[in-house]
Amino acid sequence: VNSQGGWYPLQSGETEHIISIQFIDAQTGYYISYSNACFKTTNGGSQWNLVETFGTDISEMTFLNAVTGYISSCGGNVYRTTNSGISWSTYNTGSSSCLSSIFFLNSQTGWVTAETNNVINAVYKTLNGGVNWFLLGYVPGIERCYSIQFTDNITGWVGGRKDSYDGIFFRTTNGGASWIATLNSTVVVEDFT
Image (tube, rainbow, N blue to C red; front, side):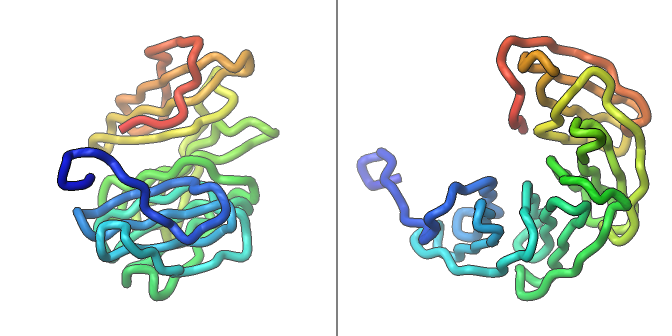
């Protein structure tokens, strides 16, 4: 935003599409791109620096704070940093498929959606910061889970699309063990907060 209250473009330094971007505060932000790279800014987006390039397709990212973040990828891996992206640990979810959306409630509890039989409807969960994952179950009636979020350990939502390319939104009140459709739409639910 400029001094007159309008928007102005910032240069990311990236030639590929940006998949996901998240600001931790007014100065610190991260984004990932289709070049399988993670970038960071510490000056509100005026300058972006390459943090890491991954050897596989990456799909989504979430940061809890300026130092701890997670990136999901194809091949079933989740990458975790606990030092602002200086180094990344790799943890496998138990799936060899592409992971879609990822969400962490806190530094220990997180969920990720994964593709099964060409349908992204499997939900995996971790209780130890992403080190170990277990298959929680499947979201019925959804072909692609584009976004997953929880407000506590038991209440969460997934948004995505049905095989007809209509949008659908599901809610769980038991930590993801079962899901109930709460919204059907002609518009695909790709992201929500």
